[in-house]
Length: 617
Image (cartoon, rainbow, N blue to C red):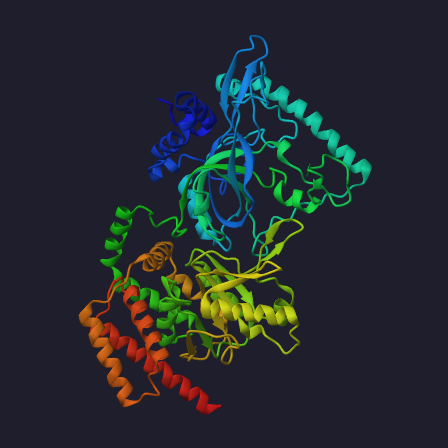
C-alpha cells in the first residue's frame, strides 16, 4: 500500500497504476482512491497548499491544494486522454494515461505513436482561478499555521528543466548532493544566457495581467483543469481543489507586445491573437497549472470553523453555552466602534451576520445592507471601521466613494473578445464578502458616463444582489451575496435596507485614541470566539413554527389598524428580517415572542431617531 509520500509526491504514478489495472474505467477508481486518502481534514493537511507554500518549494507533478475563487471559465479543450507508446528497441507497445498532465510523456527508450488507432481524445474544462478576493490577513495566517510548512525546494521553475518519462519518474532515486550541486551549476550557466540576450536586445519585459478583481491583491492565480462534473462550476464559486501541479516551462506561450517572432498558433488559417495566447497560456512560473482530481466547494473560508457537519454541530453546541456573555462582549466592542451608540451596535451586529439565504423571484432574502449616517466627515473613521471589520470577518473590501474612483474604476467585469477572457471588476466578489463604502469621501464633481454606470451597479448590487457583466453584445446578471455597509454624513445616494443615524454618546476628540481602547477587548482569545461566532451564525438554518407565525401575522394586522402609515408591507418584511437576524445572533434557529418584541422596539427607536434628525434639518 503506497504511503503518504507516494500519493502526495508521485500521484501520476498512482494514476498510471490504476489505469494499467482498470483501463478506461479508471476515472471512478482514481476518484475513489484519492477521496479515501483525503477524507479527513488531518489527511488533507498533509498536502501542501499553493496558497501558503512558495511555488519553488513544490516539486512538479506533486499533489497540492489550492483555495480560490473561479474568476473565468475558458472554452473546453481536447487532449490525448489515452495514448500508445512503443519501445524503440523491442517495438513492444503499451498504453499510457494522459489524464492530469499537460504534455504526453514517455520514457527515454519509448516513443509516442501519435497515429495509433488506440489513442483516445478526451475533453476537459479550464478554469482561471485567483486567490479569494479580499480574504483577510488573519484567515491566510490561520490557514498557513494550521497546515504547517510543507514542501521542499524544487527546481521546477528552472527554464531548462529536463523532462523525464513517467516510468523513469517512478523508478528514479533522489539526487545525491553532488548531483544536485552539479545540476545547480549547470542551471546557473543556462540562466545567464537568456538574461544576457534580453539586455543586449534592449527588450523590456511585459508581464501578463493576472486579472485580480481587487487592486493590490497578491497570491498565485492558477489554471485549473477539470475532468469531471464540468457543468458543476460557476464563475465566483469558492473552491478548494486538490490536484496535480504542472509547471513545465514549455507550457508558456507568452509573447511581448513588441515581439512577433516565436511559435505561432493557428488552426485552418486562423491565428490566435497575441492577447489571447498571453491570457490562456501565461508563464507557469506566474500562473501554474493544476489538474484537479477532487474538489470541495466552500460554504465559508474560516479556517477555525469545521466543514464536517458533526464537528460543526459540536462547535455550535459549545458556543451556545457561552452565548449570553459572548454576545454582550461583542456588543460592547461594537458600541465602541459606533462611538457609544448601543442601538447602532445592535443593527451593526445584525448586518455582520446577514447573508442571502434564498430568493423569491428576483428578490434576495436575508440581505441587510446598513447605511450609517451622521458619520464623522473624515477619511479616518471609515478606515478605522474597515480595519476593525477586517479583524472579524473572512473577506472584506473598502471602497471610498469618490468621484475619481467612480469615474475610473471598473466595478463590473467585462468580456475582452480579443484576449477571449473576462476582465475582472471590483464587484466580482465571492459570497459573504463585506463591502464597506465610504461616502463621506464624496466631494462635488462631475460624474462621467463610467461613473454613472458604476453608481448604478452599486445600487443594483445593494437592492437586488446582482452584478451585470458586460459581454459587449449583451449584458448578463450574475447573482451576488455581498454584505454592504455604507458610511455617510446624510442619507446615502445609494439604497439600503436599513438607515441608522449615529448618535454618539459623547464627543470624540481623537478617533485614533478612541479606537485604540478596543485593544483591551480584542484579545486573541476573544477574536477567535467572535470569528467563529460570525461564521456559524450565517450557517444556521432558520425556521418559524406555526404558532409564532400566526402571532406575528396577528400583530401585523393590529399595527396596521393602529397606524397603517407606520407599518407598510416593506416595513413588515424588514422587521421579519430583523427578528430573524436577532434570533440567529443568539444562536437560536427560530424566533421567540421576546425576540419579536425586541425587534419592534429597535424599529420604533430607529424611526423616532430618523424623525428627530429630519425635523432638526
